[in-house]
Image (cartoon, rainbow, N blue to C red; front, side, top):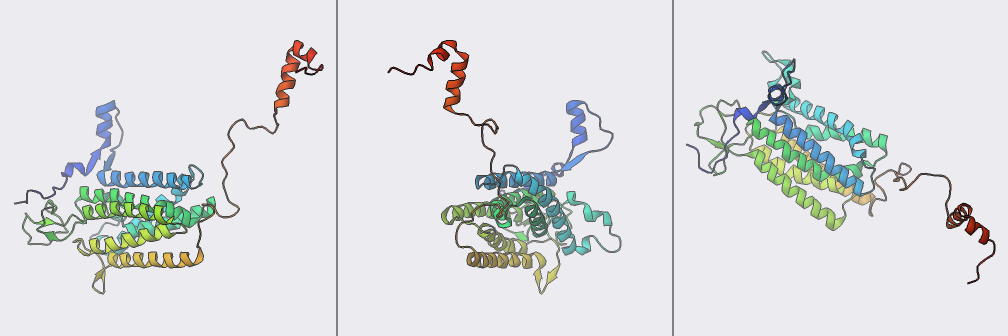
Length: 335
């Protein structure tokens, strides 16, 4: 019997939505093909939208061209998704390769299985390419992105909740998570009433606290030149190293440690290295979010014209168009 305060998992009906049926019922449209969208995909897409919007607002506030983040996202998002899926498949080879396995499942991202560390690697490649094209400094963009990344990851973890996946070990804690049976990640022999650590919820809370911490540090110390993204790597790596260590889903293990725990350690080290190197190379504030020679300047407000306009032009025009004024304008003033 479940603990009264335990967390119920969503009904399987919430896992996937029939868009074709909804369009037919609501608008009377009959699509010639089935159209579905999963709750997992909705969570991921919502996270991407939030990250792009927030990064754009932060970069524009620091002098970036409005909309430039969308240009960078055209490279970052696709490569981030490819990297996320590739990393997951490579760290879970037994799920996709071997006798009786369907290779088509390798690209079935809608069923879950997108590694955040892979998305960071693929996304970083996309940012490098896009920043080279746009002239935006890589580290300026990364610093603007940092809190949005945590927000996107928090929203994406809700997708794991709807899929009933990536949960933790059995627990007696009152906030344990109920998981429907059968589930391939649950060890054989556990009672049906067994609760599990809601690692999705732990990571959401950790990421929200991380957003608050990063913004406070940025306000206090004006984090630039990659220092903001460095603290992101450190914070996320610390939390993920623990969440990953209590998960039940199968994963490749090296020297007794799960592959994603190693990746979390690498994230912490990368953050520390960025802090040390960038502190030695850059002491002051960055002069611009653009590289030298690639700066963007907002267009001047008002009418675009090469002609000049002065008060004397006003006087001449008025006099020319008013005969009485024109007749007296040469006599001078008597005041």
